[in-house]
Image 1 (tube, rainbow, N blue to C red):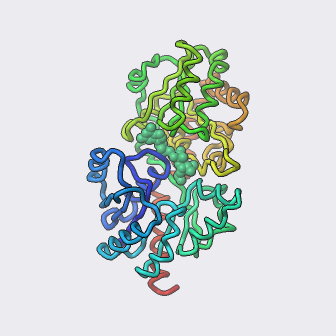
Image 2: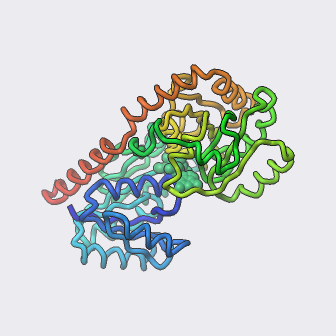
Image 3: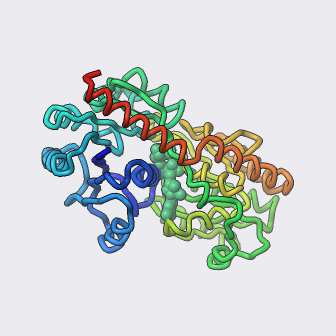
Length: 382
Ligand code: GDD
C-alpha cells in the first residue's frame, strides 16, 4: 500500500508523538511510505536520521501546519507518490486539511490523536475537534480517557483504538545501565530514582525535586536523576541548587535515542508524578515513558492525569499517585525503595504486562488492518 504521512512531529526530535509516529512509519508499509515532516532544528542530525530509515522523508521549509502552502505540498507529493491513503500524525490541527485533501485527491485521510485533542472539549473547544475530524475516514485514540473525552465530538467515519507501544526487544530487563550511572557520576550502589521526559510542569519533575529532601530523610543513600530537556530546566536547577551540594540530584539533559533503554535500566524506580493543569487542557494522554520503564523491568510511579493510570497496574507493577499531593509521592517512592522483593516482583510483573498489551508488532498490525479497511471501503465506495 502506498502511504503518505503528514506530520509536524517526527524523530529525531524527542517526544511521545515523535516516538509513536516513528514506530508506525517503520513498521507499517515502510517500503512504500513517504513522510512530509517539519524542518529540523539540527539539519545534519535529521539528515543522518532520515537516511537511515526504511521509509522516505521529505522535510518542509518550516512547521507542518494546516496552511495553504502545506496543502499544496501534500497534494503534489500525494500525486507524485500515487498515495492510496494519507495519514496525519496528529488530528489537531492537521485534520483541518482533510476535507480539501479528500476532495482534491480522492483518497481517504486517517489521523492519530494524542493527549492534546482530548483536553479541548473540557474547556468548550470541542468545536475544534469537530472541525478537525469532519473530513476523516478514521481517527485513532490512545486510551480510555482520551476516547471518552473525544468520542462525543468526533465526526470521523470511524474511531479506533491504536495506542503507542514499546519496542520490547530494545527495552528489556537485560539492558545494562551501569555505564550510564557511572557517566552520570552516581555511585554504583546508590538507590536511584529517575524520570525521563520533557521538562514541563505537567510531568511533575518540580514536585519530585521538592519532595526529595523528605525521601532522603528516609533513604539517605538515594539519588534522583532527571533525564530530558525543556522550559522548566532553569527553574529546576534553581530548586536543586537551593538544596545544596549534597542534594544527590542530577539533571543530565537530553539523551540520544540509542541511550534511552540504558536510562531506564540504570534506575531502581521510575517516577513521573504527572498532573493535569490549565483547566484540563494540559493532560497526559497516556505516557509512553511508563511503558518503557516497565518493559525494562523497573517499577513505575505514574500520576493520576488523563490516561496515565491506564499504563500501570497500581500496586503490582508500580503505583498511581495524585501528582499534586507531595505526601503521596513520597509514600510511593518510599514504598518501592524500601522493599527490594516488591521491586523485583513489580519488575517482572511490569515486563509481562507491557509485553502482553503494549508491544509494537500487535499494535502495528492493528494499524495496518485499519488502513486496509479504510482504503478498501473507499475503493468500493463503502
Ligand atoms: N531520546 C530521548 N531523549 N527521548 C526522550 C527524552 C530524551 O531526553 N525525553 C523523553 N524522551 C522520550 C521518551 O522516552 C518517550 O518515548 C517519549 O519521549 C515521551 O513520550 P510520552 O511519555 O508519551 O510523553 P509526551 O508528552 O511526549 O507525548 C504525548 O503523546 C503521547 C503519544 O500519543 C502525550 O500526550 C502522551 O501522554 C502520549 O502518550
